Image (spheres, one colour):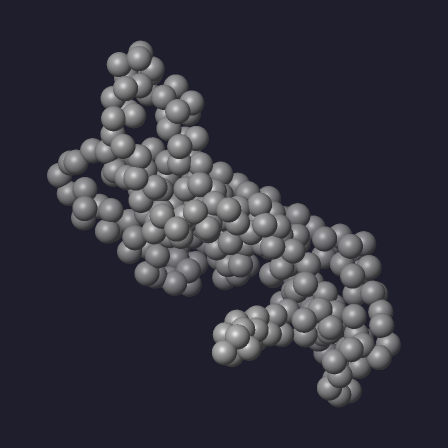
Length: 266
């Protein structure tokens, strides 16, 4: 029985990690070796793909651009969602439930629906091919999600804390930053994680709204064709490096995510 109990989790981990291992395995091969046949380990081990990514500005600037607009989007989304989530949690007003639902409907539409309107709007405003353009476009999807997650965490904080702070003479900005935000720190961490991950993996808007100066790594990866075809080893190495930022973020917010699931807020 003990062996059977560990069988399913073991198979699940293998199934989950196999694509990651295969990507890592391919990143240390040449394109010819990848196309030449099946092998669990590189026959001709090489790190040329990683060297090219880390030394070629076209490649490493793709990562820099992606990180810039992802961080921008995460900060903007959380900053706007915090007061909105507090209002939805603490106050009742005409149409509040309908407005809250309307915010979430933005998540039901694929990014392709908004690609052309954003392109025309940002071109007219002079924001095309800027990090801010991509960050603001992603806010359309991330702010509703952030409000929804934070509203759940804020609702779990007793109203008596607000009233006690006001009686003690705290202004609202001081109360919110000094007392309330630390109480929902896990919620902020979970929200930032989901905003980061959506913005990091989203391709269509990021590719449509950029050209040269702010081109993300996902767009760079789709343009690796040469006269001999796609450089598969280079693509695999880029894929491995693309996983790293997400893995780092998950490591730092893992406790917040676990707490969010335990509280039933995620």
